[in-house]
Image (cartoon, rainbow, N blue to C red; front, side, top):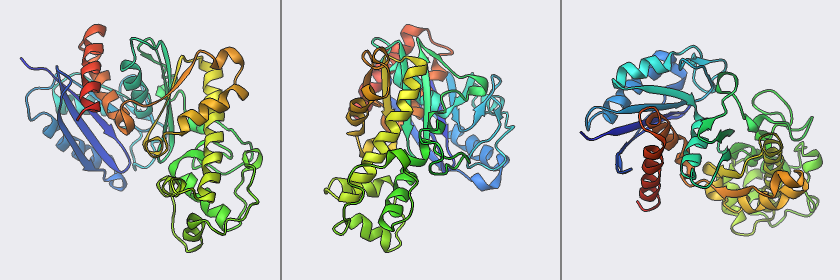
Length: 349
């Protein structure tokens, strides 16, 4: 009988799901909007609808689910869960297992993204640190197939490592987090602050050339016209040589390198993977971070660590959910084969 491995990634804006077959072929990919402001029951109804579609080919062999916020060992969402009203306390593992009629495991979404990237490199990486840049900055660490989850799967919240004490205020309430400098929305806000002459809270991250005229910057003109900017706007302008975009890029690279250095000093990875939507638009950040690390991490902490772009792009969390679910029913060799085939299909759609 054909085996089907499903994965779901729950976000504040969208619910995404995939089904992989034994050959690693993507058989179903589906998406729903998240009724984030309507509460837990409304979100679970949409999850059930998504699970129904994912089950349309036949019985599922496994289900993995990635969720924002902390997740305990029973698959219950605990503590703060950003962007989804009333999400804390949701017994997600039990609920989705009943919907799917298959073994279900739930982990923090960034940890599952790290897992996907490790499985794709299981023949060459022992210890992998993942940093994902998007609306926020997430992180995860996998050592020999084991996710380092910490208390309630909250480990490696690298976006909330303070890299500029007393700096820009982060959405978490702390000043100076990496997320306040290198996430997609933060890059747009920094660009606007610089264009409008406001204090950007850069501190020691202030780059050389900040005082240079931005008169010719089209990005600055857009900010002055009241447009709301994000990383996509910054890197579109960067590709055209825009002076303000170059400044914002240098700030983001420095902040990201500092956050990565903290993770590397603590965890000693052999591979650092950068992913998420921001990296898709700015792949050069991988080489920039690698250039900066020798000044931020002790020699043995960086010399054996390679820096790479995510192989599963901005869908690492989604594939990680499917792989982690499959790991509950497949042996390591079977899982590695599944990931290899899935990556080949992903790279050649």
